[in-house]
Image (cartoon, rainbow, N blue to C red; front, side, top):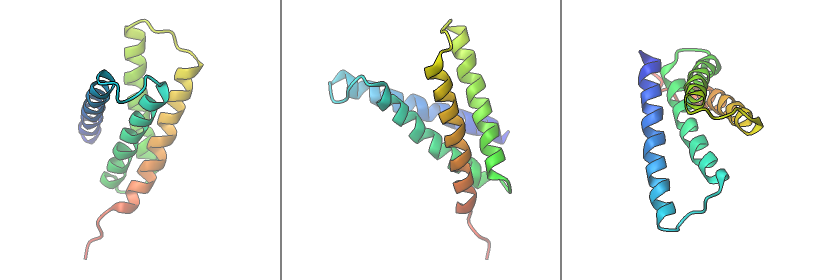
Length: 116
């Protein structure tokens, strides 16, 4: 259940930030660079990883890896559904997703509120 809530939270954040980015692009405030979109998604993944780390009891890196694999399976499924070919750029993106979620969940486990 924890993974379902976090996955829904992640995709809601991605949709909100994509909408904001689209509006900014529509008014010519941002550029069309792939790097800007990658920065936004990496930023979202950092927040999701920290959230996963705060929710886990131990081994934050393992929880981040599980969430990264769930995210990659969903993105890969969507890519195959829309018949995109997997190329080197996507593989690098998936590796960035894994590293970002694992590291941020390791950081997030240290942000837990300590009981008095």
